[in-house]
Image: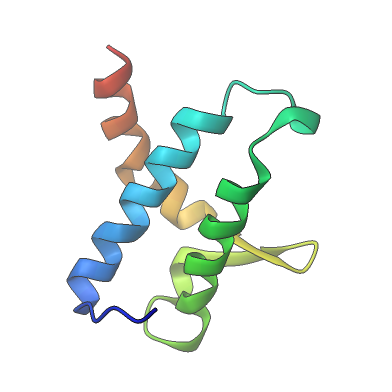
Length: 84
C-alpha cells in the first residue's frame, strides 16, 4: 500500500499515531502492551530519519521512537485536554 501525504499531513499523522498509541498503551504494564501499535508507531517515526523531521525521532535499543523534542513539544497538552 502506498499513500501520498504532504509534509504537513505526515506530521499530523505522527501526532495521531502517537496519541492513539498513548491512549491504548500508556496505562498498560510493559509486558502487556499492544506491541503491534508500538510497531506501527516505530515504523512511521522511522520514516523521519531520512528527511527534514529527524528531530522528531530518536533510537532506543535500535528502534525508532518519538524523540524527547516530539513528546515535550505540546502533544501531551492535547492528550491532557482529552483526559479532562
